[in-house]
Structures are given as C-alpha cells and as structure tokens.
Image (cartoon, rainbow, N blue to C red; front, side, top):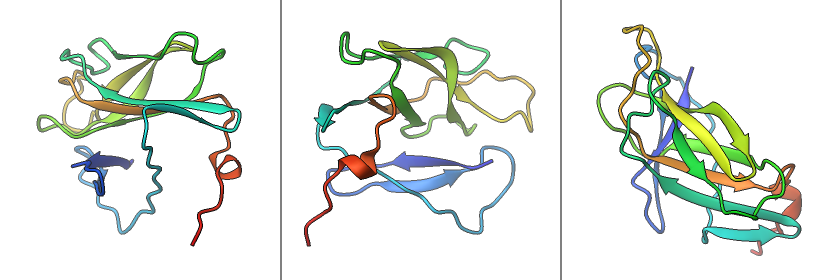
Length: 149
C-alpha cells in the first residue's frame, strides 16, 4: 500500500513523496496527479468547492478520536465529494488519512491510520490534515476551461 504525502507547500512549489509506512516496501515508480487552488472557497460553473488545512492537537489514530473537518454551514446541500490527505509528518510512524465514519454536508471525520506490521495497536499522534471538498459529482475536467498557451 502506498499513499502520497505532500510537504513544504509554498506559493510556487511543493514536495511530494510516496508513503509506505512501516511495510518496508519500495516503489519502482508511481504516477501522481495534483490540483492547485488559489482560494479557500469558490465555484466552477455550478460546482462549489472549499479547501482547508488543520489539526486539533489530539491523537488522531483509529484507537484514538478522529480529526473533525467542519465544512461551512449552508455551503453544501448534500454530502460533498471530499479528498483528504496528511499535510506533513510527525513522529516516527508513517500514516495516511482514512475516513472515520461521519460524512455529512457540514462535517467529515478522519483518522491518521497507520499499518500494523510492527505493532498491532492503531493509535497515532496528531497529524496535520489537508482537504478539498466539492459539490457531489463535480467533474473538474469538464468544468474547467482549457489553459491558454
């Protein structure tokens, strides 16, 4: 299992790597896609989006309590499509974002999940999360204008 991990986000650059946690696995090569946003909220045609980053300072592992992403009230009428990832790393155990069950139009809960290869426990320290939520069934390719050259 591999997950992407983005770090050192700047205005004009970022670093991306593949996270294998403690599985001792390597990747011969992976394709990585990405999307950049210039504002925290907006719309493309009939589709709205909201992005954010955050942490709660509490342990976020599956054995702990999940991180809660609060979405703006009244922004989405139904549960949005949402992409969540870790935004950096803390500690020695690798992890990735995993849904924690609650997913409604104003909230998504997520865990910092880690493998159980070396330890059976699933606790994890707090991690910074990043997310992008879109109106359900948003097609970013069809909604975006072709770039001018």
